[in-house]
Length: 544
Image 1: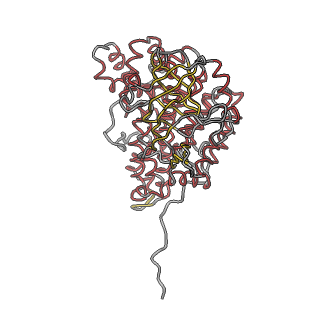
Image 2 (image 1 turned 90 degrees about the horizontal axis):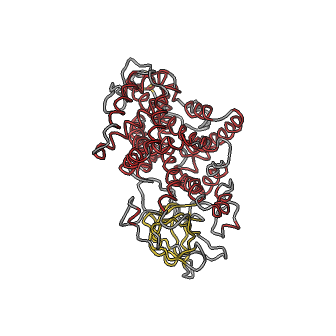
Image 3 (image 1 turned 90 degrees about the vertical axis):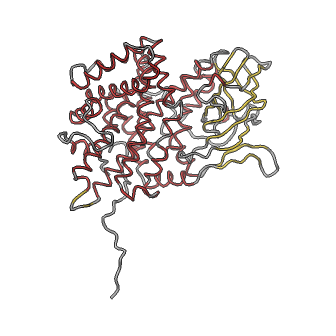
């Protein structure tokens, strides 16, 4: 009698065929909260279309293909001519094309542009995070270019286009362009004032010739780049086009592509400039001030990217445990697993809520909101990006051995998770930036205190955390050694205030009890058992 030992039972179906946007209760609520009634239906429809694509089997397969087939460098053609091109798998171009068409580079001139783009980026990151790098850089180039109205008028329509026009050609012949950025050099890292790339003025006003290198150049296949170099008047921002107006290729020598821990589908390169043509952006000596708008925008994208990774990790964990049976019942219903999942869900909800609040401040654009962003963005970038790795690792553990296998997708999330804490200034850089604002920009601190003070009296644990934070602010002498401590508390207080205002009571209660009230262990799954953990987990469950 034939026997089989390969009957498959008790395995979780793939989380596929669902709308990644509309099944995310936290994200949909944030979009509704921060979008005016007029464009709301359009925004919801647009994000739902992107969410359905992100949840489809086809697009998820593209994400896996792009990750499994990293880009390759071609420095020369078959005849020995220098071409310095990066070749990508077709899946990369499909993903990037959908991202551009979804408006992920078009925030600056659309109703609720930053909120809808932030939500879209959070959704699209969950498919494959690597392609969001050029989307982020292209979006973030706009505020820097606005330092030069003539350059902005020329380039902004191309940057905000919703057409992905691949291939290296003069920018004025393309329906849309992508931008990258190059600031980091070998000897300086985050200390960009130590840059040695030299900019020599040419005869035409505002044009220069660059000589030097960039240790990290993001998205080297792009049509243009914003870089920093030392001009006669000091560190200055420049626009470097990949192809010149006459069709000749600018000198942009790709030395090698970085072999990275994660972010495998995206190319990061070492670049040499040797007589490279560039156009000045802003005044000589104002390089950091000019490019800081781009840096702030990409830092917000680091928050959103981490929030997206956390959401996908938590969704996978909740989905798996809702189907997997062990010890006589669903894993989801086991008290200890429920505690772990609820704890992870709190972290994810707090990150999403904060990221969308920051995007809404960009849409508002008023002085108070811009002052709020000055402190809130680096504080959020510091904290949210650091929470991403422990969340993804714990979520993978919820899947057990299945979560350690590549086919589950969790290992890709784990490898990607540290990236946003390193890019655009690692943790110490963010903490020091917060201290700089505290010392020099009293309006920023006032705006932050106004924001968190909206819920004063609503939760005693939040009130106590605010009081402790004010004590920290009162003593700025010798604060550098306490900078991480202070910035962590700022981020937690801000997240707590937002959840008290906008989240269901069980979510706000659990967050304040654990993150602000001290009733929490040192690992996930140590929430007070008296909380309504089942409701928190159900709120995080994707209804596939």
